[in-house]
Length: 132
Image (tube, rainbow, N blue to C red):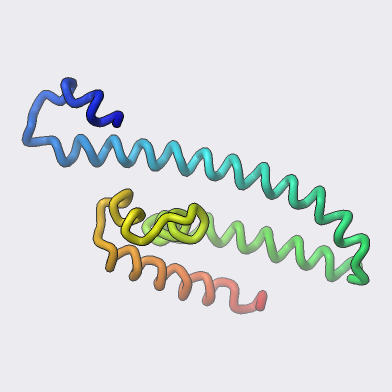
């Protein structure tokens, strides 16, 4: 919709593809910032509710700390993941988009999204091997 509303601002029709890609990229970045903010809020909420759940559990204090540390490490590794894999992972696995929708958002083929997701899984598996 935004592209349609702003099409009159396009000066050179030969630059349409780059122009529309920039609009999509900016919207994706904005969406990712919102997702990051929501994830942070959800993490804070889950930590506050998990304290009660952990207290009811028979886990040792070191095991509870270990679980929190593992969650922090997983989150950190996601942030360290190469951007193309991270974007595909966030869009498909966290936001629930189909691979086709993610491909459109990332301006690539469905096969490329599938490959990026596979590489992301392998990357995470290698980085998190010692946690499992």
